[in-house]
Length: 313
Length: 238
Image (cartoon, rainbow over all chains, first blue to last red; front, side, top):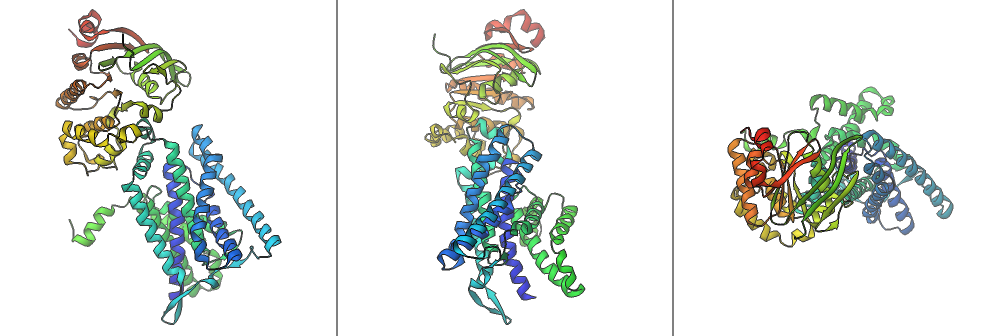
């Protein structure tokens, strides 16, 4: 059970980052980005291809996976999203357009996989990077992979950077202002397009980085995005869609309950249940929203903090 | 004659197929307070939207210091110095007072004078200094209006467009707001004041335009307008 929990923690970290990316893009541009899981899949492939070509450790290429996701985000904005936003497109149109982007990116991954196969004779349609991970030691006789610790460290660093950026820099404050009221920000001289590009970059970066982390956990295939899209969206929605930190929490709630839940169910009910694993994130999402309609980000965290640490009000 | 800071020439504008403004001509002279008065639905806010660039006119020209800015987007207009105080104390409820002031000085031109502007604003509104780390959403109505004005002053406006600053405020706060406007004039700020409160506006304004059904029906220096038969009957009730 400990090995399941460790995998679940690393999985949740990657999921949380990707979900935070979905939330950032949604909050600032109102676009529900269906192409996000393809950004994540590209994070997988950047790490895999660079590692296969240049060796070393998969960890060297993680940040590049994130940056490539960021570039995909910027490209999506300039090629598709920008024109629709200018034309005043509604939410549904924005959302459907990213479905188109998703198909393009999915096709591109397959083309890239074929290119790797024919040119370098890799096996990009089925690769496992976890065997190249380092071992931290063992816990009750179970080996602990490096990714468990590294993924947690990355999440903490990202939270710190985001917090500093959003509250200490002018650009970050301008971003929050644009999210709260774009027209008001505009008449005060804040160029909303700059904020939109920045959000797409940040969102894409987190999506790609999430993928880079997950590439050390899962078998990589061109279809990996399809496996991840449901839990990513579930995490973002559980987080309340209007809070970056809420979606980070959502990532952990969804990720841990998915991996631990399916292991427990498998033990109790038998192996046949495993194929129903993708259902768990959706169930958790539905139950959470029934109890807290505004999602985790909408909870009164200030009050909860006071209750817990200061003994009531 | 000096060059007006802001000039609207023959503006026609509307939403969809509905025409709201029918040939508006206005000038805002440097260092003066110009009031645009009228009742609900007369087209006051639409005129302001054209001036700030949120709404592009169907025809006509917007001039700023004698250059055509009709096609300049709103964020660039704020940069050159056309700054608006939006109606209804529009703030960002989840940003602190200080963050509002920081964002007010977003443009390059305003950033250089950030500390001067901050001193001025704190001197005008000492309350805001006390509350600089408080979220804007937790301020009282009057304080919110002061913050909205302070934020726009941080932008170093060459012309300040005020959209109904007294709307929805208690009477003693209305008086407070007009006192601030008077003080701003003393500091040499050029203001275009859009108001429904005709009585108070006539007290502070130098030049007045009356807007009715999208047309300017009366204009003149405020002393003359105050004494005109029409205004006395329609707006002042005397």
